[in-house]
Image (tube, rainbow, N blue to C red; front, side):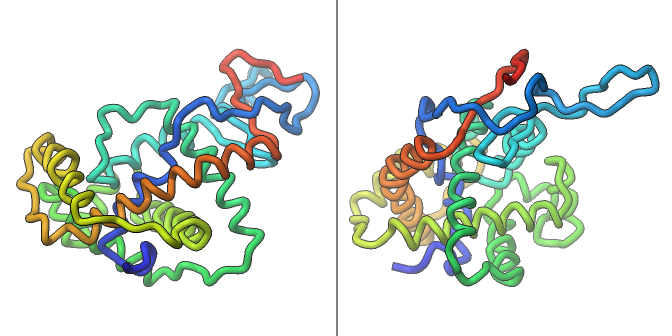
Length: 252
């Protein structure tokens, strides 16, 4: 079984990572200044605040902003094999919180960094797998830049986000992957019930199962890993400080 990080054609499976059930929130007061409210503001000439962003959640000392959530929703366009029709804003918030918790833990452990070359290798393969890329001719640098811009990103921003996802996946793989086995019957079931319908929904011709079996194996592996990851993230939330900020909330 190949590594999720080193296998360039498995990059898209990261979409399956961290889509955990809602309701894992530990409502603990974040470190804030007494009397401050959730929105971040910039001063205006009238001495009244102009809202430029809003704090959605506080994860230990890290802030998750409304702009982060909107970017996460737009970035789903780079994850071609996940059904985005049911990807809600609430799921995006939970996903950002979980990813932040994992990255905080990963920073505490010395690991080999994901290199720009590894990121580029995966993104080169991803450009071939996104059905919507065909109309932009993503096989060219100019076409890829136009596709990224259509989603509200620059190529540099896509590279940075993908590197972060690879680092998250690498940490999770090292911690949870050992001992998990995927059977051929599991691969066929996923192909028939998930991959083919998703290609059909996007009006694209699905590849042969033999061509994607390795990638399906990695997706199923991540689903198994996620069940182990769930309990670990519950523990991290209980031990740390995670708070979802309501739109009209004033923090104490």
